[in-house]
Image 1 (tube, one colour):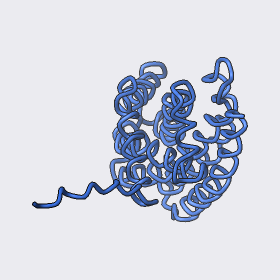
Image 2 (spheres, rainbow, N blue to C red):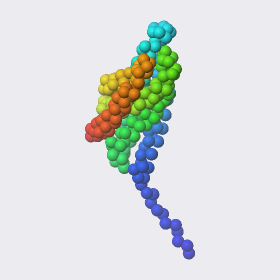
Image 3 (cartoon, rainbow, N blue to C red):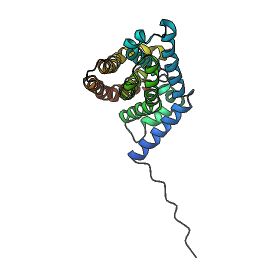
Image 4 (cartoon, rainbow, N blue to C red):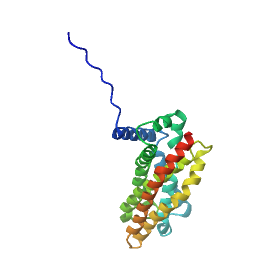
Length: 236
């Protein structure tokens, strides 16, 4: 008689597998939650379209402020999907399961920030050159607008994740996130708009981009530990 096949227990996923599963989950939630990046990109385009209608379509008027207005609209569009970043997991108990999983809470926070950047920051960065050129930015600066928005979008995702963690469990969390996050959005807006302004005047945008990258690295360190502490406090 042949022996029945031995039933082996499934091996628990390692750190790499847990990271991949969590990232895929966060991206699915970002796309399925009320339109995902389509809502942010639509808001971004509509906001940049309002200014020419309000002040007129003269590029001599819009050109000097095109970079600043585009970056301000980019920052506001990045706020739209932050409220549900942790709140939905707290409501359905998924946050408790994530706290007991293979990954430390610091890693969970950074994966959520990465998913936020991929799902919202990257589409906004691809939309940024079109919106900036509609405001009067020279077409030659379109690649720089996309690159700076891509770097700045990482900063927005990191600081936005921190704001979402600090507002976790609070009433009117969306308003609290805006109050916490908008002051933190000022440096990337200044550096990103400065890069476009320097390029428009014939100067090198590298110093402004370097400051923008330094902000992203600083935000990554702060977000990992501060957000994890805020989530643990909300759970306790």
